[in-house]
Length: 55
Image 1 (cartoon, rainbow, N blue to C red):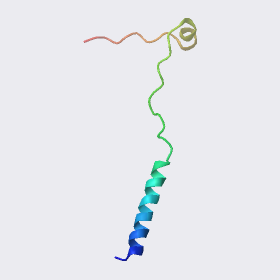
Image 2 (spheres, rainbow, N blue to C red; image 1 turned 90 degrees about the vertical axis):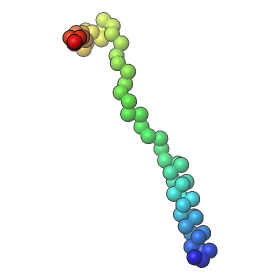
Image 3 (cartoon, rainbow, N blue to C red; image 1 turned 180 degrees about the horizontal axis):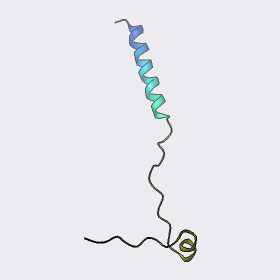
Image 4 (cartoon, helix red, strand yellow; image 1 turned 180 degrees about the vertical axis):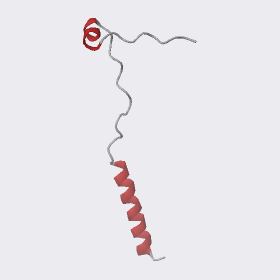
């Protein structure tokens, strides 16, 4: 292969690496923390459900 093809392939590879390194961070997909139980929260959203049966 000629040096021109080697240089162009190396340039494309470097361009791809540079594009990947400047990509934005992935969004945080974890659930938000549960709401604290206080009097106002229980009045607005109701009391939490009772715990399920234990087997």
